[in-house]
Image (spheres, rainbow, N blue to C red):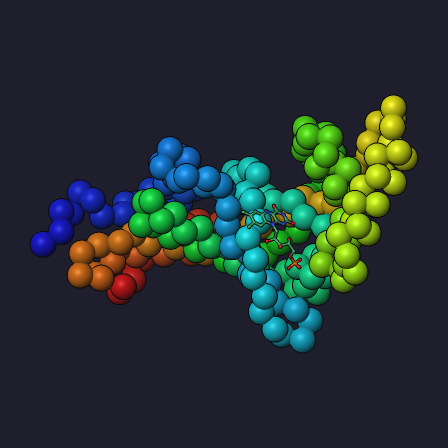
Length: 201
Ligand SMILES: Cc1cc2nc3c(=O)[nH]c(=O)nc-3n(C[C@H](O)[C@H](O)[C@H](O)COP(=O)(O)O)c2cc1C
């Protein structure tokens, strides 16, 4: 029924397969092919999820940036178990990642922060991410304040704005197939080696 050559290659390194699919997504998604769902668990065991942008990845894992004082920042401090999910509608593909998260070294976060547009760098200072905002003026006033503060000076990365690395222990690839007989391959890291198995859809 299905052409075997279209099935997911379970012998390949999952990071290479991630790269292959991500490169395809860059060509076919209308925007934000690097958007991924990040699921976290709070200290009282409640899950929460939201979209963040993948900024880089390699064998070490997947990096995104956020405010450490935010809801997700606090959850990741309390519980380092997280999950990521990419769903590329244009490809009818999904990648699920589970692992543990850690804050990347300051110098790397500085490096990325310094490549961001001025407005985004100011925004990182102005936004008390996930705190209650009484009205938009308060936010815009804070933007003004920081614009003045950093006028003609170098804007340093706010200490609460950090890069996070998700070190994967599980990566699952899912692709749509006819009659919902979808194709799934799960890779689990065992003693630093990736072991794969196919899963029923
Ligand atoms: C396409 C898209 C990309 C986003 N990228 C980021 C990001 O890279 N970092 C971030 O902190 N928030 C990002 N957000 C906002 C988050 O989804 C979320 O609203 C915010 O981080 C607050 O989440 P929290 O209250 O759970 O901490 C993005 C939202 C969307 C829709």
